[in-house]
Length: 287
Image (tube, rainbow, N blue to C red; front, side, top):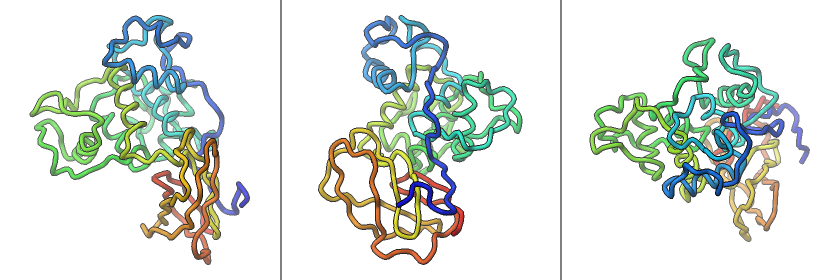
């Protein structure tokens, strides 16, 4: 299958590799961070090891510093693999060049919005409620759940499904039995823990990194690193109408980076709209 299927608009594609720097400062080895306690050690080690974040300095990760919306967006975009240099700029006047690709990619994927049409709030602190909406989004970690499970008095309708999802998947809990802390700001250490838990959660599919192309015969996907080998793996492909299409099982071998997924019955045409492959979205123009 060609990587450039006719009429296909690439969406969740990491266009160019981008170094993610949460704030000024060179990367530091985990052992050099003097402010990282046991509570944050595993998460910070994961983020720095995967190249998702650096410290505020060579010796400080900044676990107790509030994380800005812009820095959170940079980490999230890299973790989700949605960096796409082909998307239009979001048009926010307050987003510096270092965050433009991440914010534009997340906005194009429908994961974030600005605080206004011209302002993203790049340097504003990120709240727990905003974090829940970003991470639970269907195009992010797909964590929305039954809002009836939420008993917190400070969680309004806007946040209920997202907060329920984060709790159901063990990403976070409330600050007390009655308060989620929706309007409280998040620290860099807390955000590192939330991203780490989402990345390694067994309840979240970690197979597909991006959808490369889709045509009448099947789908070409790029796999996430270190996917568990399996003799037969069935990928879930959902068309824009919500129909799950039957796919031929494929073997997943060690160090495999891509997979060609074939429809059991070839399609007569590829419908326009948003397709989902194991939770990763791709926008397709009709052929």
